[in-house]
Image (cartoon, rainbow over all chains, first blue to last red; front, top):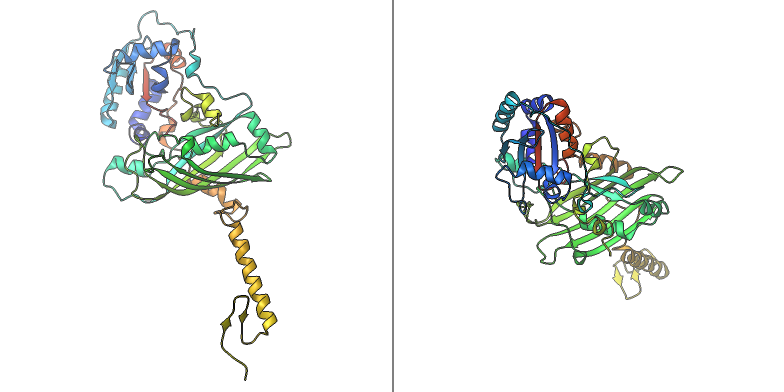
Length: 300
Length: 107
């Protein structure tokens, strides 16, 4: 998120990427593990960089030829530095002779999560509404004002239940465990089943009310939240709109979401039907990484 | 002379300007309201929530990433092989933004 608001908000970098590069964004947690054509190509690129131990992260910014030859690697932010790398690479790039498009011969199903047939995507966004101490640090300020983004997947069977004004238990638990999170400063640890202290959901004429209380086993993190909203259907039972807002008091942090406001602070989470206009609509839910069944059926 | 002060027994409140029967009814009504309130406490109810329905869309909009954010104007691909194919066709190099968690989502 820091990169989105700094490096990739820089007009020079945006122009260079649009004009002279093919920009691609990947979750390397998947790609470095994939035993397939895409994974092989990623390991070829990353293996030429200091990120060549594939049992560890390979995150960073990479410039590479279409043949997979590494041109530059950087893992620091700063528009000036990245801009200079991009300029140099675009000026000097000579495509290798005999370049060929790589054909996708294999796909590793363990890391290729697909939206179940007939399912829908709901955009999930979270924001800390207040509670931070004002910071003079540029990066800290970006974190404090950040709105997170993830996707909630809802199955066709669950849509049918919702149409009948029944809130499916798996969906309730999926939302509680994987989406009632403060992930505004990074990747948040999901809740265990044992950490759901209360989960009440009701539906009536498409209106939804939910009340959930979460508390980590070590009692260092928690969220007491109430959700309200409305789902609208067409005559054929398709979902036309989904708008829910959850608000409550959150406390604590997890490994990659350090420096939350002190004590309890208000966290809001919105749920809105995706319309496909945003490229992020096609991404798998973060909590489904390598574990789609567990994400869809958290009760089992 | 009529007693003008308030007094409260177990089942009734003697209110100076009401008769004893009315006082009992009033006390019973207050007791009933208290029981109903206790019964409702902790249960979910529609229409008594944090927001009016019309506010929910507004609230959702306030908790959403800026759709016009500058980084969104970059034509990001999400499939590395598709991007490689495009790089071959266009004669351009690849720029790969690789993160732990998807850079376009996740957080």
